[in-house]
Length: 304
Image (cartoon, rainbow, N blue to C red; front, side, top):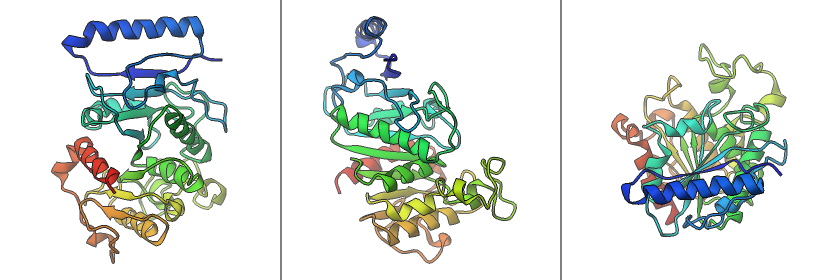
């Protein structure tokens, strides 16, 4: 069995610096000796997370790189948030200041980030958030559940909504409590450059009439089958798209589908909007504090 690709991460603090160094050195030594499993007793919500075998995408056989973030000095059981990167990104997306996974963890969560197949430190080949990538996310969710997590939320960023909505639609039995979506695109019009002069990051990957390709990669197809509460975070000036029509498409699909609770930003739950212009947008200032805001919304969703 291959060495597990799991990294434990916590912020540097003077009181625990020596202990942290010893813990990581002991963990490394054990990995080198056993080459198959790791052990620790320092994870409150996921007491056995580092005792997981290697996280493997069963559809591809690829070993997936996983990183775990926690608050410093925490000794309480915490809910888990799994972050899904946007575009063709990986876990490095969440070491950036504005989207720092540690910032989110410090708000009271165990946070999981990962590299999808073919990206970063994971094995495999790029799948552009199709079924193979979705199956990799499924393996991570199941591993987190097996480790003892009782509350799990999925937080997607940009194109990551395709992977997130896809896995929830195709595997409704997964133990995910809610879905938070930050400005994710709806379909090929947004990501494949199939509408007007809008260009997407997949416009050179697939033709607009390639139904086989797009059948696996349009969140608008999956959203009506998502059965968990869904929160859309959207500013009036999208980070990529010229308007927010894609947000309206996904929210409308969720409202017509199986999700019991759907809302946009701070809007009234389960409200139908006549057009994207009617959506209750979040301010640009709030976007700069996106992780703190996501943490607050996640806590509210856990109370539903």
